[in-house]
Length: 421
Image (cartoon, rainbow, N blue to C red; front, side):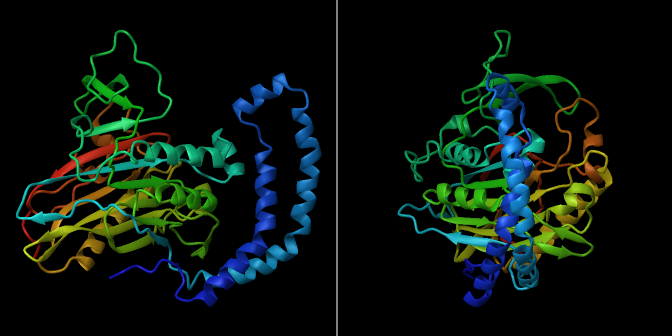
């Protein structure tokens, strides 16, 4: 089954939806610019050196407020057109890029194959909302993130074996990391900084922060790509390297008793064909998180063939509830997400399919760095296994991704699993 690229079944509905967005845009832009007047720490330091900076808020603030008031009638008309269109909109957009190079097809019987995954929270909110996280310059950050994700890809060969320094079980990566301390442990290739992290027994052990992203990443799963312009820009930057991209994931408008102003922020890029995709919105939410359609994105990808049967993999990307005080909501969402992931797999698995992996990743908003009993940082006493890959019986294995501002890179080797019933 080939996925339809447009979220709408026909051009008429797509045109009406776009018209509603155009009518809403002036008010959206004015409100975003008003919130953007809030200063970040860097802008506050810059203002101390430039006396003309305070005049920006004094001059542009009233003008933006006037524009917001004047654009309200057209925004109301656009809202009346935009809201009903949500019922006909599929909760994600899909982009298929025709590339000259393709990943090597995996055929069995044969040797095992390595798949690599990157999961990261990139915090690409609209400029005004990003200021509340002390971030600005959304367009420039989106370009920089795209550059980091694709660095080294142009010279990488799909058919060549991956360098051994990128086949470590799990590494946490971040940009602009500090140099290692002289007393740091000797670290492995590919790690720029070595830090002390407690393991699950509470004993200190070396952890790694790697500045560069590894080449030849097969699957990229991003969270908090809330801004549609940022999502479109990332699509443009990743298109030369990833043939299949799922973006603008989530539902808008009225969902139960809450109004979803932002989408889920989930974004997925894959080198391998996407056979099926499904998004589900979490019903439990509260506070500011209720304004975004946080949920679970599940995709089925085709990796190759074995004895005439498909070799497939399942990839689930999610972003759980953020406020620290609402731990129960987070646990409920995780339980719901794991159930949905299994339901998606049961629905789309055909008789004879060989399932290579089943990955559950994303931003869980769990404290995975502090010391303390490991079980207190797990929901419902669940034990998650690393790496997230399956080589035997079809049992889901999940891996936790890091929090905001970091990326998790995981490689897993899949051998010859038995066909699923």
